[in-house]
Image (cartoon, rainbow, N blue to C red; front, side, top):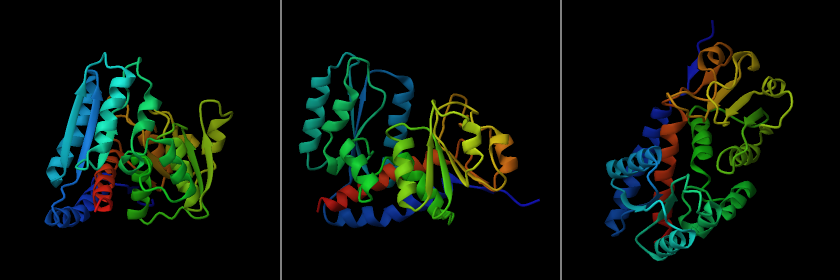
Length: 279
């Protein structure tokens, strides 16, 4: 039986962070400390956890993190004022608005207010457009993580049929664009796709980005396919039925320990990239 390749996201993330250490040290000799500003609106416990994780990741590498926690009653205009102030702050190199925000806030308007030079999470339409056209500085971090894992494990997308299940503006759509730019033939599937299993069955590379636990079934996967599971659901469960899909796949990311750690490392990388560009 052919040995399965488990795509270890922790190993990839550690390699990215190791490469960043020298760059951060060099910036500090020039009087610059990379700084990521995180904005949390409201008291969603999961969001608080994510923001804390990102802050801890920054601290371990010597990146400053500026945490802004706004009341759940915050208005769109009040949030925009905070973003504009961070745009003008020369000591801040990246801005992350934690999703989701309370219902009264126009989230898209808030995302669009982030300066393109500080959009390290790849949430603006301007940044998405640049990514799709092949010259974006900061792709959305999870799509960037997926491409980084493929690069680390020498998975070449060129000429391969990649099927992306999911079309969100910060995951499914941008990862489809990145794969297309890497010369893959890309099919993007979604909730309205008919005969979804038959599309997935044709894939050389499967990107699971649908946000539903154990959604991709083992009998949807052709033998030898490569699976990158970007899902993270309650109970540390991904979007693919891991055990069933593992039997068919030649390589697969686990959940947890797959795409997630690399996503955070790409956020750190983009922040350092921005700090270097600020010189």
